[in-house]
Image (cartoon, rainbow, N blue to C red; front, side, top):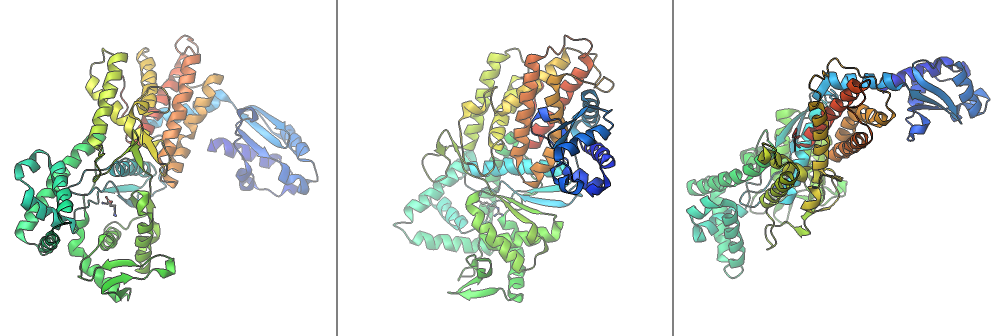
Length: 566
Ligand code: ARG
């Protein structure tokens, strides 16, 4: 569209009277894209020129049209105070389809990010606890944001900031040594570790000495005691194995797993930096950073017994990333309940003069419930994420059995559809919306679902399979089909959509776009007998192929697979 905007601007500025005082770039800035297709594809408004030209806007528009060379356009007309340009359909569709078909999966790629590093703190579940729906959201949102950043020329670094340190490990060690056994943990690590932890909290109400024991174990752990370290490492590795099964299912990989513990030996230097900058203040024995200047509560950095806290490790993490990556941005995909906390973190880093602090962005998100139930580790109404994924895959399998019983790789497709439904069902919403997930709804092949988008592309692929000698590299792309026009314009929008999604860190921009494109394509599919008209066949297949490419790439950005058949 840019090329056409330029062309329109040139035509207008050469036809415009010098008294108007508008140069080419001023004209360019005024050009609009009308919402209503009846008003053409590009429009130039004339009301602001009335004063300078001593003429009514309607007149200006008419005079401009009279002086403009409209060849190359379908038509150029004056409508009230506007000059409306209707693009030549064959020419524009040729341009758009040629770009898509030659760039293929690279279509929409830009270099705005100049290869700048962007660490993305994402997923970050806590060791020895089940991964929650919040962690799932962080994983899928973070993964999509990483793909979108890469599409915009950044270099994302996906870091799983595991919750693998803190006083709870003293409790866990105490509980395990009292009530646990190795075989159980090996069989079902997370559930058993949680059981010990829950038991600890039940028992310590009446046996406060348990707390002393736990404190002692944590202190041993902090001082590198061999037994404590061995247990901690073991808990960490069995938990990570369980998490990795879920990540595998979701198809998400990480670049680093630098959990909180990774920063232990890096904290003393950071405490010293805080001291040197005179930022640490004593308050009731503890060490705090005053943030009243930011209108925030003080950040507690060290407890009175000298123990570090979550924020102490996060400050250290941010400084480590700053030195290691010289990041263009620092992203944290963490639930909205930590919004205040990230304000404090950013403020402390700004006080310390950490260069990338100003580009720290917390990307918050709302709560998901599944079939009305909340996921929680403590309450009895736990729904395990793994179960949700398995249920979804089973439902997908059932649908495929009904619709396409002869499909050869049913299990793989069921996996791609079932998992895709969950990821898409999450990502189609604005991040901050709280959503209740009803699995059956997310799996429908019609409606605003992942399977609907996947199925639309499957339709496109099945049309293409019916014409085996179609060659997308050489075929005609000149389409004057009015029904195709909406699709052509949507295809043309994709590069701008990629930019918007990046600017807002909002995968739903891509998901909503994919739904629009799928819907437009299905409408076309229903109303146009694509294969019947020999004169238009090649150009129509070019369109179908382009839709398939862009739907697949949209889904890939979201982290959703595109089966060719389903
Ligand atoms: N482990 C934390 C939790 O489950 C999330 C960590 C988020 N990342 C961070 N750098 N603070 O709540």
